[in-house]
Amino acid sequence: MLTLNLNPKTLSPSSFIHKTFVNPKKPSISHQFSNFKSPIHCKSNQITERGILFDTGDTFFRHESATGRDLRVLAAALYKQSKGQLRVLDAMCGCGIRSLRYLIESKADFVLANDANESHRRVILENLAIVERFQGGKKRWVVTHLEANRVLTDCYLQRDYFDYIDIDSFGSDSSFFLRAAFSSLKLDGLVYVTSTDGYSSGGHRPFHSLAAFGAYVRPMPYANELGLRILIGGAVREASVLGYHVTPLFSYYSYHGPVFRVLLRMNRGKLPDNRDYGFICYCNRCGNSQAVSWGELGQIRCLCSNTKDAAPLVVSGPLWTGPLHSAAYIMEMLNLAEEWGWVGNGAGTDLEKLLKRMLEESDPRLPFGYIKLDEVASRAQTNTPSIRTIMNFLHKEGYAASRSHIASNAIKTDCPMAVCIRIAKELHGC
Image (cartoon, rainbow, N blue to C red; front, side, top):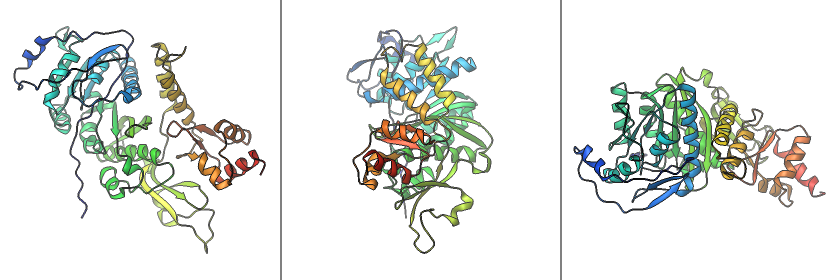
């Protein structure tokens, strides 16, 4: 019997800003929260990120997650600009830097900063003290120390709904919080979810991925993209139970961890006809992939096989088979980042490169997955071709092709593997 332990854990991440803010470290803040036990004193570890000086104390903090924090701040700011208000629930705030950036950079009207570890209270309060707690008689921020599901459920029961919910959890724990998050989210609101479960995306723990995301995943060449797709698919399933549908605005993979992050928009109504929610098949013989709907499950076969010599297919799912990004939304993020001086003129090179690559990946002609050029070279028995050269050839022959933000030596294309092999041979005079 399979036993899955999905205990909520605490993670921290965050980064971003135009001005330099110095943390005054007001010791008087703590007496306002006398109903809490005296916090354990944390070591001081001051860091500046996007001009914000903050203390990580002994909380979990990754410098490498700066880009992920940039993306979430841009998304929250766009929401505030379009809706005129922004209430954020940071369910696992760590040292509080994400909550602080939502207040300063995204101009959030209110942030509920929650972290289950009460020993982090001092460092969170001192970091958030950069922003006045009250404005016009209303609270700008509140700090709580509850398990994530508890704080999300309490908000739902009190009908205290939020515009933007940030769930930055370890492993596959995000699936444990999704239903409570959707219940406490406003319609047309945003949920930013995280997974660090690389074993499941690699197909190494299929029964674990089945329990956590509702998807049985087997090893495939584009494992890290599967990590994003099972995360979205799990969210689609949980939202559907409540009568909602969610769509990804952007999906981001980062090698450290690894970390899978997705921004989802929630609205009323189930996904029509299970569109974009199905199965993915990969043929080891020819190297091609295909999406399979629920109704086609009993008819799966690869076109490279005849009835007498059928090659077994690797099948994973159900998961999200639709687009990972909204091109229009990525363009809005890029424009805002440029307006803030984060990209262009040599500033924010990594962020600019990422957003532009996501924009390329948003071409509706591109299918799921990507093709590693090393695999093409192996099948063609040639040296690995350069990405630029092979993409130029593909474009000349009328195929869609782009780089992948997930794998540096891979391309996304609607071109069959056989044609990629032919092009690789031609490039080497074979």
